[in-house]
Amino acid sequence: MKKTLPLFLICILICCGAHAQRTEVYNPHIHTVQVIANNDYMAPAVIRLGEGETVEISFDHLTHDYHRYQYVLTHCNADWTPSDLSETEYLDGFNDNPIEDHDISVNTTLPYTHYRLTFPNDQVRPKLSGNYRLLVYDDAEGKNKPAFSTCFRILEKEVNISAQVSSDTEIDRNKNHQQVSFSIQHKGYPIRNPQNEIRVHVLQDNRTDNEVTNLQPSYVGPDQLRYEHNRALIFPAGNEYRRFEMVSTRYASQGVESIRYHAPYYHVTLQPDLPRLLNYSYDQDQNGRFVIRYDEAVDNNTEADYFFVHFSLLWENPLTEGKFYLQGAFTYDDFNEENLLKYNPETHAYECARLLKQGAYNYQYLYVTPGSTVGSTAQAEGNFYETENEYLILVYHRPFGERYDRLIGMQQVSYK
Image (cartoon, rainbow, N blue to C red):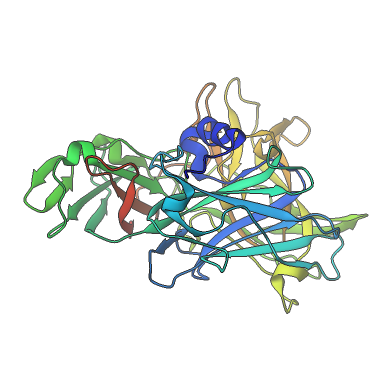
């Protein structure tokens, strides 16, 4: 018998639309949601089907009180809408299971409980490739009030992808943009109607706001698809991410101006940031990622503390339109009130404070025009062709008559 998704979950997935691939936090007490494949925080949240690989989802609830969290796993199409599959078709085992791995924080000013779960596990094992959406809810509050949702992908490698990134684009040459081109080799793997069967997604530095979809091949040949000279694959080059570290309470690390304790919290004030529009300056960033770390910890997951981090972007006069938002993996690409910078006329700066767990963070300031959902680096970060951006290419296939999108290819390529 086909087990249908709860109505609330269908509504969440459909309403999220293209942004459903990002983490969405609904409970304000949930922090630091991470999805890490094969213990490598620098890798995409993708594991290979049947290869013994694992993906770990972890998060903190800001209390020492135990909460019985349950999770529900849903298979999704390439666009993150729910696929037309029953649970028994995409899962071995049972869905809707408790998260049993949890520990309370130790010697932190802000108490929290750290929760972890891994896929595949003894309760449930995905058996198809594609997109998977994980929804977590507190059993005491019920499924209709989820705590958060997040996602990962499972790869069933059937094709090879060759990719390049060039600063010689069809907009400019060695100036402000980068262009991605690639080919898909599928010898021995039948793709009869690529225009209708293949869906390709391209992400820059794992950002979801400027993701490129709905691509058509420029060339279809025997065992090969090419995506070349496509203006949709031209990205503003941006700049290297800004960085800061807060790995101790005893000294100020990179990018930190001061660390002070104002009961009951530590407050970290970052060095004021300036717009970076004139020249490119190389820095070895992590392309927007963050890693939890406390220098004196045995277990970073439960000994790292939470600090209020104060960001400031120096700006002479307030904008007449548009807004600045923080962006980095820790913001989940969400242009919401929490990540919005507000103008302070006394300091002549756009400012924002975020409660973050100790560690090393990448961030940047994106400008969003009214009515837009895409952030721009041009106003505060600049666009420089030398920027070492990372591009993730994902290839999905739905043969005629199939009811779901298989993830058959993945390739990461950087501009170097």
